[in-house]
Length: 461
Image (cartoon, rainbow, N blue to C red; front, side, top):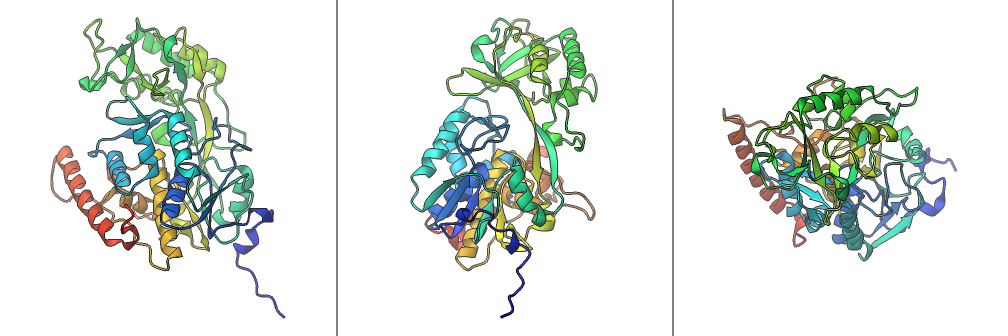
């Protein structure tokens, strides 16, 4: 009997047969996208096997064995609906998002931003998932694709072994460099220097370290001359523009930081009554207020240089560093070229992708991507068409980005945060705030209509 030739993707499956799914769906990766997708599918009655490499293997950027670990900042950014990210928060809450539920439960003071106690957040996620009937865990590193329907949510730090398994499907691997900001012990900050204040008198959730012009220039010069972690010789150094290392910004000009993360706008030192030349802001890391991270201080400086250079800042001369900054390579795929309308690979329909590996950037965006992919998988399992959110919603705008709807011919796909530039424009000639309010009203109306019209949400939210 002549054997039929296997499809391209079929030959990639299972070098280790024990990874075969024990449920109709397997999901690889328990980051923000993975846990959101798992929670949605199991909550809607679909059994799932979640494959997670912790605790047996961790990437250099991960420190705990818990799911949904927040690797970089502890902030999910603004929670104000008039911002694009705040609107995305609102829509996710409206869908019963696990990530938003746990973020709200572990919130720490951060003004209008949604910042969390990162350990408590991951613990809440773990507790919510561990007891769910229909969800089974495989604690091992995936080195190949399992048989059957699979969601890949391995994130930007996908292991080398699994990246090699995906390479025949994804083609050339794309990447950019990302960095992590340092964390300092609260009781080692000099409170004779620091002052509590939010910008424009919006609360007092942030600690501020004021710099005069001389101290600022000294700091910039030290950043420029400091020793940095170098990439491998075969790697081109490429950064995500919204998360540049602080030393990379310093190299762009003497005043770049003063108009960027160290901008003093909206702040006045209570001891002088004056606006400082520059300000370093510190955001609370945990509910106990025992640790603070340096806002905007993601870095690729070597560890000894971080201690030396950041120790030059007023108020941090005796700092005890709980975590120093790191640099890591983030992997993402060319989603518009590779993924279909339901976030499955066009050349391998049983394989779906979710999270930062698809080209979304940010904690909330990753969770949103996981939820959308889970909805598409649910539709596939139930034999109906996936109904994507309308483009005027935050979820729809993010979906449109992954579909490449805003990319001109020949333009390279790049990761992005949610922003109002991804939304359909408002035709009226309005000022900036009125335009945002109009977008907000249009998004809310579109979201409610979409939510009513998709039968998979009935009686579940």
